[in-house]
Length: 143
Image (tube, rainbow, N blue to C red):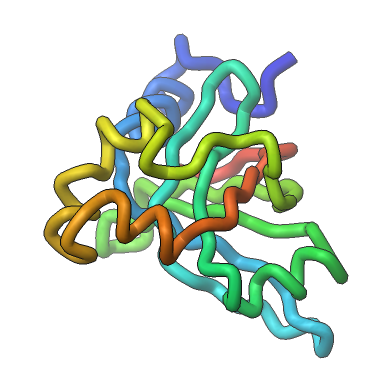
């Protein structure tokens, strides 16, 4: 049974579309004091596993946070009026078996132009964001 809403419903279809098309999501991990720490991320959604592939800098504080507490959330922005949002809760872990960003065909298809524009090349992005992470959704909500 999928954790995502039924894609044959209006909400489920919207969630599926946004997970496939949106380029920015907000990933929230929690620090040792219990304070949520949201950050915008680039992500590639995998519908078969209800998970998102993302990449992190090796010095990012989120890495120590997820070791202490892997419970996380990933949310897609609203429409500016408090509607049309998607919130997924689940677990964020390192993904040592994942390909680097510059060798991930789906990730390249989605972000190669952005990586070139922001970092100069996809190889530079992959060097800077060299730690693959996997967010595994367990629940979904939104409107």
